[in-house]
Image (tube, rainbow, N blue to C red; front, side):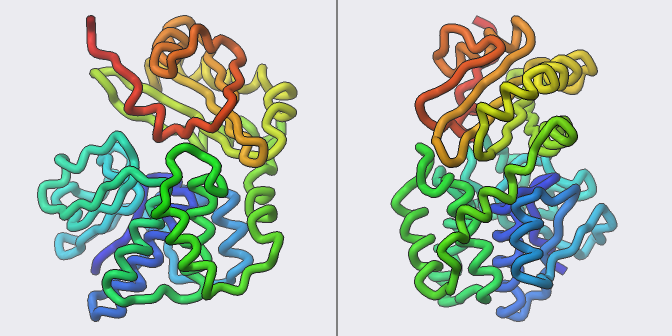
Amino acid sequence: MIYCTSYTNPDLDGISCSLAYAEYLNSNGKPAKAVYFGELDLETKYLMDMLGKLPLEKKEGEYSDSDCVVLVDIADPSAIDPAIKPDKVIEIFDHHHLTFEDKFPNAVSKIEKIGACATLIVENLKMNYFEASEKVGTLLYAAIISGTINFKNKVTTERDIRAAKLLSERLKLPTDFIKKMFDSKSQIDETNITWFLDQYFGKKEIGGKKVGIAQIEITNLEKLVSRNKNLITKFLKETTASGRVDYVLFTGIDIFEGFNVFITADKQSDEIFSKALRIEKIGDYYKTKEIIMRKEIWPKINLTPA
C-alpha cells in the first residue's frame, strides 16, 4: 500500500494533496490511501462536512515493511508520524523554504517555492492527463485560496493563480464560498484559543536550537488579540519554560485585511525574531503592513554563532 500523507495536524493543503495524489495513484492501478496523523483543523472539517464522505483515514503507526509513503506539503522527518521510516518515503511534494529532503534517501522530490503545495499537485495531475474528482478538485481549489490567502500574500505566484483558475472553471461553487471558508476557521475565543495555538504550532530545529512559531489565520484579528493577549503571552511563556522550544513567536494573520500581528514573551525570543524579520523590536505587539507567512519566517532565522 502507498500512503499519501502530510505533517502532524495537517491543514487543508496537506489533506487536499493527500486525497488528490492517492486518487491519481489508484487510477493507475497503484493501491493508495490518503491518511493523516493528529487532528484536522476547522477549515478542513468545514469543507469535508460540506462535501460529504471522502476516502480519508486517520492513521497512527502500524506501517508494514511493504508499505511506501508519499509526503505532501512537508519534507521534515520531525514533523510527520514518528512511525513513518524515512527510507520508506518514495515521493515528496513540498513548497516550503526550509526542507530536509536529504533525510529521505529513497525519495524523488519536487520542492518548489510557490504559494500552495496543491498547485504542485494540480500541475502534476495535468501533466499526467488526470483530472481530480469534483470533491477533491474543490478541496485543491480551496487549499490554493487558503494557502495564498486569496492571492494576497507574497508567496503567491502566477502558477498558483493559473492552477486555481484551471480548477474553478469546472467547479460549481457558490459566490460566498471563500468567505464562508475563511469564516469557518475564525471561530476562536478565550475558551479555545490555547487549543488553537497548540494546534497550529510549528517547530523546527535550527542551529541546534528548537524554534517554535504559533500561527493562526482568522478574520477580525486585532479584536481577538486585544481580548486574549494575556492568554497568548501565557502560552508562549509556558512553551519555553517547559523546554518544548528555546525560542517562540506568535504570529496572527488577518485573512481579510492582510496584515500580521507578532508577539514575543521573552527577551531572547524577541531578539531572535526581531533580527530575522528586520524589526527593531517586536515586544508584546507589532503590526505589519502586509502578510508574512510562517513558511517565509523559517529561512530568515539564523542561529549560527557570530
